[in-house]
Image (cartoon, rainbow, N blue to C red; front, side):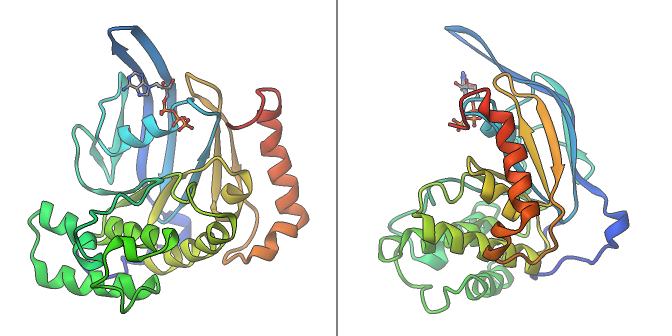
Length: 271
Ligand SMILES: Nc1ncnc2c1ncn2[C@@H]1O[C@H](COP(=O)(O)OP(=O)(O)OP(=O)(O)O)[C@@H](O)[C@H]1O
């Protein structure tokens, strides 16, 4: 049952249940040109409230994995459970944020945020209130009536994040959400996203090509191999949250980014 209101029920850190369970999941695309094995069988879980970041070489199946979790594609083997239920079709219980904000240009900021509410035919009034709260939380109070082109790229991505959160989904999936932003805006958005996750307590799975971004944001970083992607390593990030940008100078931060970079040196980098 989807519910409005920014906060979810508090759970003890030690006994956080898994929100996502990926069990033996693989994906092979089959088309006219033959088969493309995209993901090797994967097993991992994401805990409630966890921030898991995926890094891996280009084409290793990261976006495919996100689409599988969102139910947009069926796995070739294995199964995915989201909040205990097997994902079998597009379920709408995952908010998705892509590299481009993908806002409808003729709709106001508020109307864009309300899109999932309309698609799911949920009652308008409580979600309108939630949309207003979310826009306030991301610093866009007063911009509700603006059109997307009147906003900067970073502001548009914040709108897209509000749209992903408006129906209070079990998980937020983010595919290179800040990849199109300039470096300074991107850093600011990383700090913002960390705060937003703290306030909403959402479970987040984020894909990035930036190792520092991964370490800055994550509770755990999952490193993937080249296609067909499998799990090369999973790292706990031993840095307390909230983190400020200064953490990037912390020897533990530097050591971990170096260690993760080591996975890609032999493969010629992340991109
Ligand atoms: N619909 C499709 N049909 C056939 N092959 C596909 C399809 N979608 C993706 N692929 C292939 O599957 C592999 C994994 O693609 P995917 O987009 O998941 O990788 P990725 O890790 O997200 O890449 P990037 O980091 O470049 O965004 C790639 O080789 C891609 O060409």
